[in-house]
Length: 450
Image 1 (cartoon, one colour):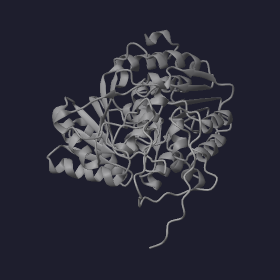
Image 2 (cartoon, helix red, strand yellow):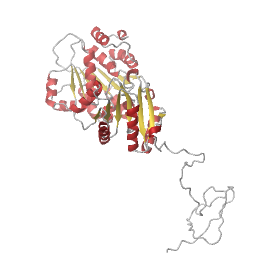
Image 3 (cartoon, one colour):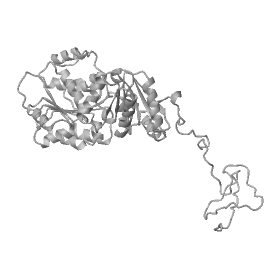
Image 4 (tube, helix red, strand yellow):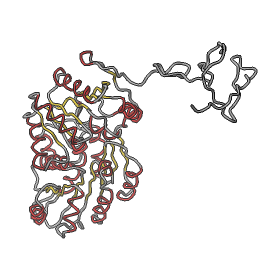
């Protein structure tokens, strides 16, 4: 029960109003420590309730009587507009019975309108690093009195090249008393370096390991011969799988547009989302998906984070993501909050090694699946015999005399032959089949040019 936490009664009222009964594991682990004022570094899977784990303690810290706001007191940094908008909605839901106000600063919106909002001084400022820095450099933003800083999806911000921007903004919040860093993956050396710079004696909470991500999601692979075959498999899945809503991920905008066009031609209710779309179109795509106006969203990794849609129960990787972390965030769009989901990756010859490396990273083995109606010829790498030679029609090497290596029968020359032999200086003597005495080298003259 949320009543176990030392939260203000108005926050508990909001939690009850939203029908939140049992806290999730990350909330149970993080909220008490956050209420005590500790710096936190938290790793928890997508859809596990991370947002509430830092929003509730933040609001509790800012609670008090209504008064004129003169300083921004808390900042939440996030990698994408979509995630920032989602977080703003969560803050507004939990603060509905308080006097706390939040503001949003992201790219794609009118710069002057945002500057006007900043002059009203929200208690909590939510935004993406790039646009916040632009407002800071323009003299519209003062972060000197910030008490609490949250870095959400910190690993993704590093992936997107925001490391210096985040460090600059953290430096502007020099008087902060608490910092919390959340991510869905453990990240690499860059994340460890950031933790060392922005956190002070943090409590480390790893609610789950990477291999435990998305426990309610079945993860499958289907092999395909090429991209056209992938499209055939995709069409079969969309026509035959049972799902409420689905996301199809691609690695490029061009492929996303291509698939979207084909789905529209087949009269599917679909939308496309990628970096070339302006903020209005991106917001429309997500709203239509959430409201059920469309059933399928085709997207690049811009939608892999911050997208929380009820009923989204199937994810298809048309292109395999480039890293294990990207894979985790893609499939994290389904199977959220303990629900069930299906994640399917379409694998050609060029995708196999990448898929295998992601399996090793996750310490998981994806379920292999075959659809007989659209079965292709490619089923994965050729199996290897005990001798170490791959199965197939690969031509065997010869020993220079026209005999296959390893043949027990020695070559017998009957009469003159036109076969050319090359005697390489320094070549080792051939060993007879019984492994004892070496065979004599055959010495021939260089072939005469015709």
